[in-house]
Image (cartoon, rainbow, N blue to C red):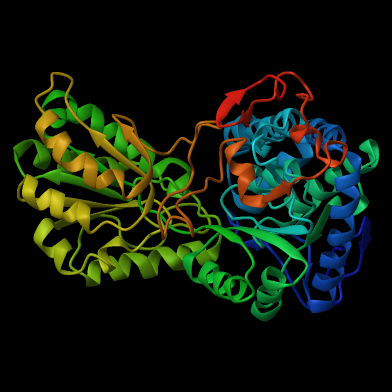
Length: 528
């Protein structure tokens, strides 16, 4: 057995106080990668939390320019080590080295870090609010403790616990991060943490700005998110594990922001099928099977009205699902989860049109799976028929008429996205006006005439939604500076002498460009 990999605590790579070990597997070969990682005890977690609390105080004294410089330097160091990072992520996840990892996800990751640096530097996320009549002033600031970040299995770079979106937002707010690496790509996370530590040393940030553990048992994980000195937690993963952590955090009064499960319903109205049904069949198949369906925005439900054009769409997509190559799944657990979820859907009355069984691809895999159910059957058991099958699967719901389609939509759970396809001539407009208001309240991001798989990293993006998509509908995990507010506290100053105020709240605008709410009017000017 290989030597056990070290953890990163307070700027030092050291052996874990371990209660066990684990070996990640290459999902394409089903063989171990050759590296062994520790399962940390409470001792490791508490040391990391204590070190983060000290680092939080140190960062507060350093100023935003150093934070921004750290994020930019980290992005540079990631790019300098790109080949090694891509090779490791490919071996651990089975995701294509090119274009997925090297050409798309890694550049997205460094771009996020640079966007976070810009936000840290210009301070717009702090939302300064000044009321001159009462001399009360407020803004958002860092939490004063570490942020625990639990990364998911499907984005080894862009959502990584020590480099991804939650990490970037937490650091931009001035918080140190305790990364809980995902067990499906610990080597990738280790390499990223090495570069994060190097960036901290290069820029003078505290060495405990970024810390890393790989795995804990459930009790230790619950203690991590509920510890008195933890600032907050960002979690992306399964609904079951997330709710266990949420219960622990809520009992302790600690904030936790979660991305859990989403089936991302797509409504295709009759006119769109008449106008471009063949095109839509291909667009849907491509979106659903991309990355073996292992995206949180995968279109897991398609809602249509019965009719001849719908029948043609069903036949076309069934054939395309059957003929398309089957991709590799991220882990054996994902393959097992697909089998359980498809079994649940079948048990609730869904008919298998294509696939439905394990295998068909290289390594861990599950056949491209398409199922169908009528609207009445869906309404009998909507909870079971919204089981998320995390992978290359989707469910077609065929409603009798528009009344039933709207009723089906009323039973949708909360989702990250929802989409409506309609014709270009306005024939579908009455249908759209009926179903859109219902769907709008079920999703964080509403799309028209495009599949939801892509998530643009732009300031206006909302990658959130009502439960169970996330744990809170008012926050986003993508889109800076909005995503920073999850890891901040509102600080209020009442009659505090001006020289003691943060620069953003003093009479003079510190940069001349910062927008501040002064006596209920947004302004870039000085007070008075």
